[in-house]
Length: 498
Image (cartoon, rainbow, N blue to C red; front, side, top):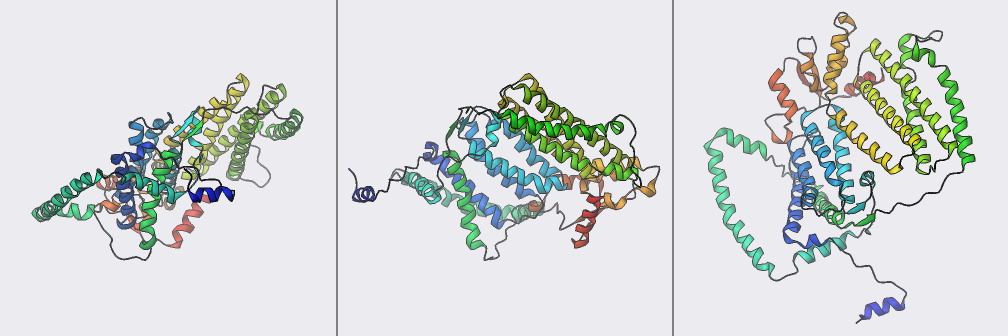
């Protein structure tokens, strides 16, 4: 029967709220308590365990705990997206690299990418998809009603009276175990100094009152719990492939024709440099010529790639689009080769830097994607398959880049390049690389300088495997810590701009 409130709502024209359908697995007491425990642990680590700005021991624990519910659901076969499992190698590789390398990309950018990718995987884990690339595209199916989700979750958790006996038994077990555990910890702590130091450094609590805890403690706990509840209930069927409308070939023809004409004029002036020697403008040095243009050409390549994907999405085999778009891709690939040759020339003169390596590698990636696009265009292959290949290639390229010791490569390249001309070696630039470059500078008159708090291998919260391994193997004679100051920013900015 309808309640009085429902009748009044109908009389006012108010439609009843749709019932919130949470994942039935959330009614499983074991899994629900697992989510509660992980949410509490994540909140506790974020608030009370000392975590430095750089990735340390508790960061790794945090990453693994955040990954655990998704790994459990995948292992149990409860996720509906069949492609989720293929992302775990990349996620675990990112965790390993963050714990082993100290360069800025791994320490600053990779944690952000890790959290964003994991957030995306959670939200698409319950989606039925037809292609791999869809896993990387966020879709929110459920309405966002956070308090209602929590209310339903806890209502399911405490719904049965039979659970009282279970909770009583758990409480008794904890009541008996904790005192004995405390006694044994105290005795073992006093029995061995090394073990005592290990426990002290492992759990480094910071219980000093901070006003921010008033909102961060409940906020972190609720945020993590809501993520798990919402993500595992965010069901959506995305297997249907929507038909796209073809583009107006007159507009496409004029657009692509004008761009092709412009590119032809530019490339005509680059062929001499690409297949021969550069023709230097009046008053321009070889280094200035080499540095000029490769950033701009990469931006051009990126824009052309976006244009290609937009048109390819609606491509129906029209010959006009095939010829003009194919011509545009070929010319853009030639521009990419010009950009690469300029980068090689510049590095041969000035040496390598981290930024130059990244630009070079990104150039390679864009060239591969453009070449794949040209292949799919000529062969008239499925657009979804192209996106799948690009997504896999992007993940593979990212995994390779973050797993390379780029700082060590820069130091080794420059030391080898200028070994016969030591006065031209930029020792200041090498000294500002991370400790990853320490093995490469052995025997050279260079000292790596780390700005900031640095590391402490005796503290678990600040322990970093790669850092401690390099210090243990190579010592600190060519490594020192400096106090962070504004001059570091200026020096780093100046080196990147050179």
